[in-house]
Image (cartoon, rainbow, N blue to C red; front, side, top):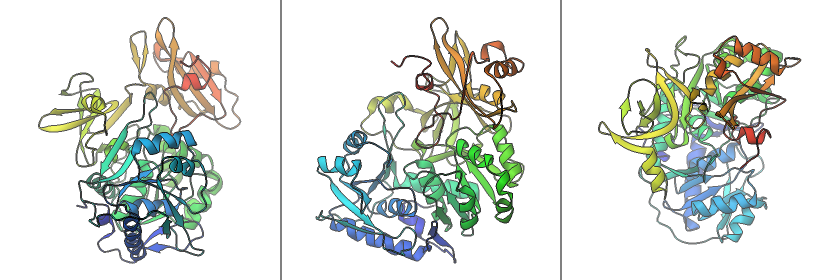
Amino acid sequence: MHTTMSALLTGHRGDSPAIGAPGRPWLDYDGLRELSCDVMGALHGMGIGASDRVAIVLPNGPEMATAFITIAQTATTAPLNPAYREEEYDFYLSDLQAKALVVTAEDDGPAVAAAAKAGMAIIRLHVAEGAPAGHFTLTSDATGSASTDAPTADNVALILHTSGTTSRPKIVPLLQSNVAASAEHIRASLELTNADRCLNVMPLFHIHGLIAAVAASLAAGASIWCAPGFNALQFFPWMKEAQPTWYTAVPTMHQAILSRASRNAEIIAANPLRFLRSSSASLPAQVMVALNETFNAPVVEAYGMTEAAHQMACNPLSAGRQKPGAVGMPAGPAIRIAHETDNALIEGTGEVVISGPNVTPGYESNPDANAKNFFEAEGARWFRTGDQGAFDDEGYLHLTGRLKEIINRGGEKISPLEVDGVLLDHPDVAQVVTFALPHPKLGEEVAAAIVLTEGSEATEKDIRAFAAERMADFKVPRKVVIMDEIPKGATGKMQRIGLAEKLGLVESA
């Protein structure tokens, strides 16, 4: 079992390259190991060691992938969204107590301005013309001395913030051992070998792309082909160039890919995938079936979150064992169901809790959140995921939704995922997100935002009538908003909380 990030690059690699990108030569494993040594020497010369935190603000692509892997072998990495504004960088850099910021050689944007105000060291990443994908050098005016001891399993490898949708974002520190364990869990779940190649379209400031695409592939001696971000128009040309054996994405990305699949049937046939993976949000059953039929490959839905260094559950890979509507079986940590308010494990439906080597030791400097989200039971320490769910008779986990997203209509509890599933059966509905709409008497009412299929003329009345034939009256959306596009977060996920305010259906608080 790997215990640190550096261990991901050891072992037999065969002839497999490591990192690729559009129009770039591959960086092989020997080159990646040499780069790791160079980065370690450069950072030590800048006074940065294992206990120091290095914020990384780089565009998606191979340099971001290798910066994460190589810097984490010397210090603590803190990737941040390149789209943030200066005020946001002011907050995140201060909250993280970062010692240095890594940016591209030419970057003079808001992250640099925020770091300069904070008196942080600014490290420039340079890419030589014609360099292999992911290869770079680092320069800085900062100098100093630091311990040359390599990080141990108990050092923090990666720090990320929670989304902070309804509260101040919480800091999630992930140890070297957490990251290495999760990478190994994913490698085993997907049976990755050095013959595999992942086409990564996920943002690399997010746990999904960093661990599932990059770290798990390296743990298997496999290849990663790094796109510059997700672009549905470019996905199939990238697929043709990269010749991947799999890709991983969030459901909205899969749906966008499906919308262009019919006109790219030749590329799909010429580049058969071993499997497709979906995570970070529940994959509608209809989308799983359509992906399977389109790519003629298993569609493996997994269940992950930042506090678990990504993966918690995964559908089995073997043919016919993927269950639409389920997020899979435990795939790394132990998974149980807990009472939603009492610190006790139960049977049936309740809050999903996890315990295992990939789970964060706790939120940083937040004893209240730790007391609320962690508890001891049956000889183990359990983390509350905030998701409601239950296991079926075959051991597959089914999620009802985020506890904060469950709609309470006058005491009737409604799963937004259940309503999503019914509405997606309508032939004219391409995407849907069900959400709570504040109501003066009932507390909350059911609402749904919908994107119609191309050319459809279905109305709100049509959608509501369809739903009324298939579910109890109290679950039928009282408000249906038909849109060209549903608002999404930075990682491509549709966000239910606060959607009523975003759509102008209620005054924001």
